[in-house]
Amino acid sequence: MLNKKISLTKLAIVLTIGVSSAQVKDTTALNEVIINQNRLQIPFSKQSKNIQILTQEDIQRLPNRSINELLTNIPGVDVRQRGPFGSQADISIDGGSFEQTAILLNGVKITDPQSAHHNMNLPVPVEAIERIEIIRGPASRIFGINALTGAINIVTKTVESNQVIAQVYGGSSFKDNEQTSSGKYYAKGAQLATQFNTRHSSHGLYVGHEDSNGQRYNTASNNNKLYYDATYRPNGSNLLKANFGYIDNQFGANGYYAAPTDKEAYEQVKTAFSSIQSQHQLTPALSISPRISNRYNEDEYWYLGRTTTKGRSKHYSNVFGAEVNAALEQQYGTFGIGLESRFERINSTAIGSHNRENYGGYLEFKTEAIANLMLNAGAYVNYNSRFGWQVFPGLDLGYTITEHWKFVLSAGSAQRIPSFTDLYTNQTANIGNPDLTPENAYQIEGGIKYLSNRVVAQVSYFHRDINDFIDWQKNEGAVAEGTVVPWKPSNIGRNTVDGFNASLRYQLSDPSATTRYYTTISYNYLNPKIKIEDGIRSKYAIESLRQQVILNLTVNHKNWTLTTANRFNERISYKSYFIADIRASYQFTDFNIFADVQNIFDKSYIEAAAIPMPGRWFSLGAKYKFKY
Image (tube, rainbow, N blue to C red; front, side, top):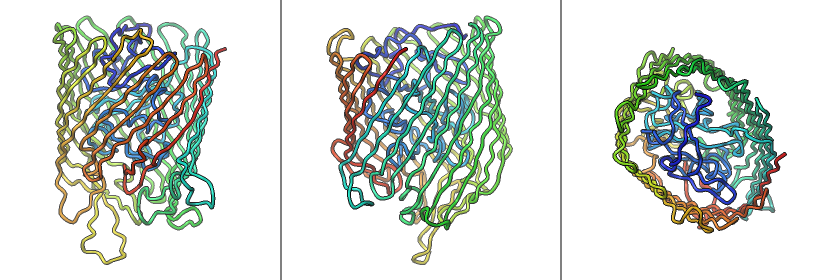
């Protein structure tokens, strides 16, 4: 219900990462966090799925400036950046491929049908983000196709006051620029936000600019973002919400997709996104919410650089979506029902012109009628004009053992359909396969959670089985020297993953103490099994994480805050690496200054392909808020 607020005095049950800074309200004191589970609103305290949240407080305190970098602090999330400063990254969850993770903005799917390489080309500056929700495990029952291993939902801010927010930052590695006779590698950025609130409406306008001359040869980037959000509330039973975003992201793509022959490659991606939705409380028990959305994307790629048209490709894609969701509350539980459609098309010099349609419907039911038991069950029925019918059932159970202990169990199936690039691309280095079939999976996960006023802990284990797993491969064994062997996707068979994860959040001091200490630690272990034939090179199947450790520590003394973020990643096919970042900040009344050092120990490491990531990087920044 629109006017119903659910008090979560123990919100910490869901915060595996969450530490507040000076002048910022402690996350454990927030009185409301609701997760929109397609599209039943379930408070975090009653979730039975494995969900993490990156809160507004986390975003402010962490030594990161892009969504890609922020996600490196979430257990189970694998961020494989090709370029620094948010220029390009692939995101996967718990050992899946980057195309098996659904990306959403305020609950609206914005997954790119051309290639999931563009999923994180998001038209939202960091300043506009309220929180990021990560749902781990098969989420097709919740969000439909392409949520095979999970979903990431970016929630933008709700405007509650009139204010202007300005932020500037800049940094450098102090290493010599390879492309100039003098100068160092640098990056700088600025964000400006204005928020306006009246009795019945609110408006937020956010702009962001970032540019860098790179961190090695041909990795310069230029990124501009615009995002507008408006809400109209005529009364307590009705709400109308609209948003629009645009991003122009261009960067040198040295080694991003076809190393080592693409040293001069360059790419420009433009994305526009808009949605209009409303919410109506028709009766005390019945609510309905219709929504339409559109995502338009342009991708232009110069394989041999912008000085020649040879090897140039251009892609235009568009996705229009429409949906309606309803919830009916009864004494014994709540029913959710909905229908949605997506119309995808692409026009490309390398892929051709193609269209496909997708229709889905779901029914789910949640109840707490049985003492200490929370049950949420349902199914999603999907029809795709290219791949036909599929059903995704699922079940979530939560049993409260004591005041502090809770047992959770979830099971479900999911599907990922091939992208237009998988099916139809025709380039020198990559050739599609129109005979591909969708990936289908099921997963079961069980775990236990512990909550007290100062400790939040959870341990879980999952097993996932994927049939018709898609991987890009090539055989270079019997080819003449100098011949370019293209990558080609195929359904290579069965892919199973067993995973264990544990996390602990511990507040070391009393919340009212002058000096407060917080620590979070998480550990993830994955054991994937897939058969790769001798002599065959795999592009994605054997590049997932094996082990992941994340350790964050924050010390807050009056207006001073010091946060260190540390992560250890061991991949199946890459060298393991340990990266440590740190931020020190001071909060004046309306003014905050901060200093970051990323990759403190100047480690050399690779996250994707053969692309070295930046070494030690120093940054300074300032943020000002003015209320009027």
